[in-house]
Length: 127
Image (cartoon, rainbow, N blue to C red):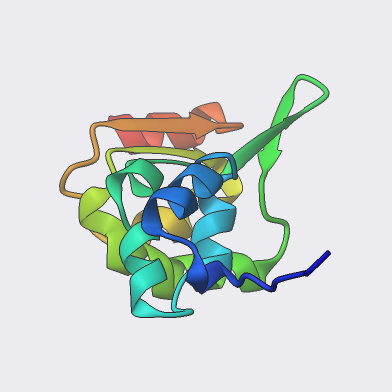
């Protein structure tokens, strides 16, 4: 039996889309961004950028998906500014809210989910 070595770059775009759709959008953006132009074109598609959720659920409680400031900083400084016009929906936890919302203007944002936000903060933001 002969073995062959197939690399990610050898796969057609259609197959990459099928694979990437099975994975988490934020992890795809974080892991694959800037590997090469072809992969950037695929991961910057609306399929992966229109709805970003920076949350995960644990024991009926939502928490930040990324606990590392390094990951958050990369999103805020490198990733969000490149895809900000494609984002239509953001889900953020209160401790990341300021960083993410200040990272870029979101002209097409029509849904914003704010989680674990204190009542006073909500009043300040919305009045």
